[in-house]
Structure formats: C-alpha cells, structure tokens
Amino acid sequence: MPQPAALLRTVAALAAAGLLLAGCSGGRPAAAPAERMPPSSDGHAAAPAPVPLRPLPTEVPAALAPYYQQQLSWQPCDNGFQCAKVKVPLDYDHPGTGDLSLGAVRRPADGAGGRQRLGSLLLNPGGPGGSAVEYVEAVAGGYQPVVRAAYDLVGLDPRGVGRSSPVSCLSGDRMDAYTAVATTPRSQDEIDRLVAADQEFAAGCRTRSGSLLAHVSTVEAARDMDVLRALLGDQRLNYVGKSYGTLLGATYAGLFPSRVGRLVLDGAMDPSMDAVTGNRTQASGFETAWAAFAKDCATRSDCPVGSTEQQAGQWLDALIGSVGDRPLPAGGARQLTEAQAVTGVLEAMYAEFLWPQLRSALAAAHGGDGGPLLRLSDSYYERAADGSYPNLMFANMAVNCLDLPPAFTSPAQVAAALPQFRQASPHFGTDMAWMALSCAYWPVHATGQPHTIRAAGAAPIVVVGTTRDPATPYAWAQSLADQLESGHLVTYDGDGHTAYGRRNDCVDSAVDLYLVEGKVPAAGLRCAK
Image 1 (cartoon, one colour):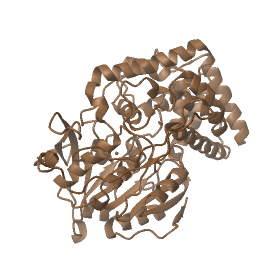
Image 2: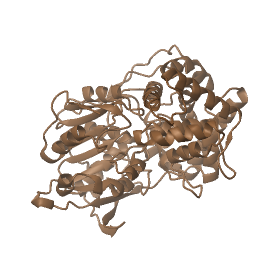
Image 3: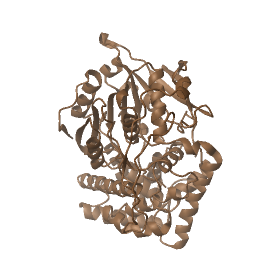
Image 4: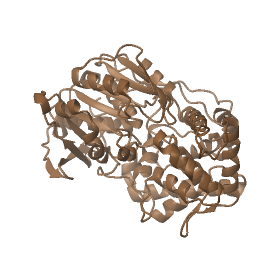
C-alpha cells in the first residue's frame, strides 16, 4: 500500500521519459510552544497550531567543525560522473557519538561557450526516499546547456536513502504481500489484516534499521546539505527540489536563510499542515487529476471508461470493487488485488505521458487481465523484475513518520474520518484514509510537527506550482510561497506532478534565467499548458 502522505512519488523514475521530473550548539531548531488543542470532530486529537521554524546560529558549532572541514575524495564513477562519500553525525544533538556515510555524485560544469562557473547546483527528486544520486545521473544531460555550463550538478542521497546508510524493512516477498493488502477494508477481518501488515512493516524496520530510524528527519537531512555546501566550497546553496525535495529545500532555507543562493521548489509541499490534512488534501488532488484524465479519455477512441466524468467514476468504482471481490490473474503466480489496482491508477496520475498506458491497462483489467495495471503498481513501488524492491518506500515511511505525528492512532479514528475523506475524494478518499494509519505503529516517536517557514533575510526563492498536480496540490505551492518572506510563485496551468523540465517553454525559461542570471520571474507569472 502506498505510504502515509504518501504518494509523494519520487520523480526519478520519470526521468527515463526524458523529463527532469522526477528541520544551543548542535541542537535542533527551537520552536515556540504549541498550544494544546481539543479533540477534532472526527475523534482524533486535533493537531497543534503550526509553529515557526527558527534558524540555527550562523556560526558552525565547534563540535561540528570536523564535519565541515573534512576533505572529499571525488573519484570517477558511473559513466563519466564523480562520486564521493560525506561523513555527517548520526545525531546533531550529540556529534561525535556516531557517524553516517552519505553518497554524493556530481557532473562538473562544462563551461561551454566560455560561460563562467557559478558553483554547485544540488538536485533532489523527492520521495521522501528518492535517490538524488540516481536522479542526477539520469537527468543531468537533460538540463539546458546554459545550466550545465554554469553549474556542477550534484546529488546527495539523503540519510536513510540509496547510497546513504539506507533504511531497510522487508524482504521482497513480504513487500509483495504488503502492497497487496486491502486499503478499503470491508470487515473487521480485513481491518485486522491491514493493521497486522502495518505492524509487520514497522517491526521489520526496527529490526533491520535500529537506531537509524530516529535520525532520518527532514531537518537532519537539511543540515547534511549544509555540510556538503561547505565542502563544495560554496558560500550559498543553489538547489532545485521537486515534490518532497521542496520541503527539504524550504527547511534548509528556514534553518540557514543567510546561506540561501538560488532555490527552486517545484511541486511544493506545505509544511504547515498536519498529517490528516495533508493526506485528505492530497486525496482531493488525485481526484482532480482523475477528472482531468477522464475528460481527456473521453476524446480518445480507445477510452474504456465512458464519455463523461460521472460515467468514468462509476466505471472505476465498479472495476475496483470487482477486483476486491475477485483478484485478477496478472501473469505467472501473481494476481492484481484491489489495493494494487488503485495504486496503478494513482501511478498514472503523476504524468500525462502515462495516460495512454492507463487506458490500455484499464481496458485489459475490464477484460480480466490484471497484468498491465499490476505493472503500473509495480512501477510506483519500483519493484524489479526479480521481485526485489529498492529502499524508496522504506525511507518514505521512516521520514514521514518522524517528521509529523501520526494522522491516526487507531482504526476507529480512521473510520470516524472517512466521511471527510470521501467528500474530498469520492474515488480515492477511503484508500488514502486507511493508508494514513501506517505511522500509528511506528517504533520511533515523531520529532517534528507542523510548522511555518519564513526564512527571513533569504535571497529570492522560486516556488513552482501546477494547477492540477495530483500529489502536491496547487494550494500547497501558494501556501509555501506566502509563508516564505522572499517566495515568488510561478504557476503552471496544467496536469501532472511538477512542472520544470517538462517541456513547457514558459516555465523552463523562467527557471533557467533565474538559475543562470539570478533574474526573479515576473510577479504573478502564469504559464499555459
């Protein structure tokens, strides 16, 4: 089942299509006391009001000096790139008591056309759990020549991800079982199975990852980026973050506003939301994306879902319900379950180029073949042909459950919230409400809470929002741009997840000009599809 808050899909996998898609010395940032709130109308304890994220001291603490002064050894790797390892403290509250090794990659600026090098440009594809190393290696050649000429393109796998002390939780066969568990339970027995699956996942992470689980927060990952910034010799951080990568970049800006260079936050998250609101709002985003798909589908000769949005919704509900009653054969010994069918549909909402594949998969499922829709679900989880899984979903859960208190702590709370989720998303609300139960059984208490990010004194920051983005709704980009003292919103009136690098000349030109020349996009810039 997709993870809480969840469907903040890494955009690294989309790079294959030629697209750039894809928190006192050493202590955590202080936060103003949160007011204790009364229970909400759906039965769970209401989240405290968001608190401001306060910057860290500008002077590097003496205990952290060894990390900021280490020497990186860049070595040739991966077909023309350079790789290095970065040492950071496991616990910034107690540096020196344990370290992590983080993997980094870079493609040096080529200086084409005699263009002067501007420094390093860190890239992050999102997730949480997406590998920035793999992303940079996949998309570096797709950046405009002026950007490649001016910047070293750099990827740092966040702690717990990929080449950076990765979180591990389940074997491949147990992940297969986990992804198949129903997320629209119709009986107490199915609720018990869902709870057992979440508990098994959490226990596996505790057993396989141990003390690392308490130290993979976004705040800690942002602090790691500042260590790398210093080691790269950059006075300020230049950065492009997509999806969850926007939260990572905004957190960096909040902690180190005076060290902000040129930051692009594309497909923005809103740090002020609690987990319940985030999941419910995201469900609404996927509902909007499904409506856009249905409208487009109705114009296609191979559309299997009907000619109106209402027909499409009824058709989808009937299909998903029938798969829930009787899973479909999907090739070999595998079957397509209800949860995997929903995940396959959601996967295709991330980018319009997947819509033809979804039309074909839905038609096949209607005819009794679950294979194509299962392949879309496998793509979401990045399941390999041999049945293995990367650590994407393990890190996704670990970061999300540490960054915010759980959305729900019991099945009863989920049940009480279902009417609100269904109102927000008639077709996906039930699934996403039950998915949000996952963090209830996490073995480590959350260290984060909803907060606002002002980043007072930071250089101009560009926030990009897509009006029909399924995973990071446009309202999130508006909210983040408003929170940031120097935020500048660029709007893409279109579909899919994120906008920069998706071949829209208006968006791409505005961002490239900002990165290379420092020119802030015009106020209120709105780019058409």
